[in-house]
Amino acid sequence: STIDSKGNKNLSPFSFFNVFSINPPILVFSPVRRVRNNTSKHTLENLYQVKECVISLVTEEIVQQVSLSSCDFDAETNEFEKAGFSELESEIVTPARIKESPINFECKINDIINLGEEGGSGSLVICEILKMHINETVLDKNNAIDPFKLNIVSRLGGNWYGRTTQESLYEIIKPISRVGMGIDNLPEEIRNSAILTGNELAVLASAEDI
Image 1 (cartoon, rainbow, N blue to C red):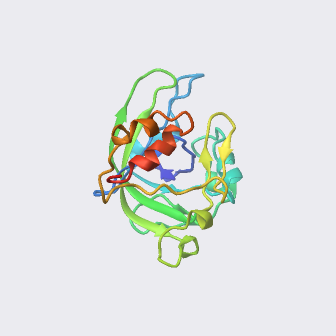
Image 2: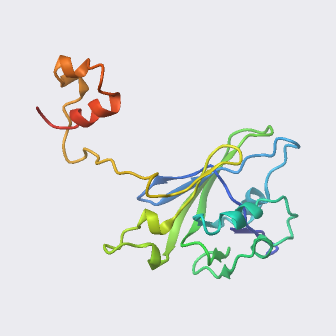
């Protein structure tokens, strides 16, 4: 969610998005120049005018509305209205939040790094989170985010998306409190097993010793 200097609101989905720092809390996303005519998106143009945005997570319940907001509307069109989203006034920044999204991040823009001038080139937008809004319905009993309650979607290539389901998620216990022995320290007959996979060897090698 962005806004230009005239007050025109814009809403647009971005696949190229991730967390890049925790302290300070930094999110980065990348608007890409249109390949067909080498023009930039309204989101990027708005950010040069008003260096603020709201980043909202996409769940399966709203993914079709989010996709609809990606249509190439003109700059004066409010995608909140086109996509049927409810605007929530932000507490720190000017752009609005999406009521239907369970998690909204109010952000200021620290930097915009252009990666090229040709069609298809992106710009890294470095956003510092000023405030998070989390709907408590997506939290577990320990007040941590429950991935199944969040029901977030992942964007794949082309028209493909991924669901967050019980079957698609699994946990990997990270060896952060210990130093694993490493696959090179496993007995040779295990290390050269014709049955065990690399994944299975790594599980064994996460132990500190035999």
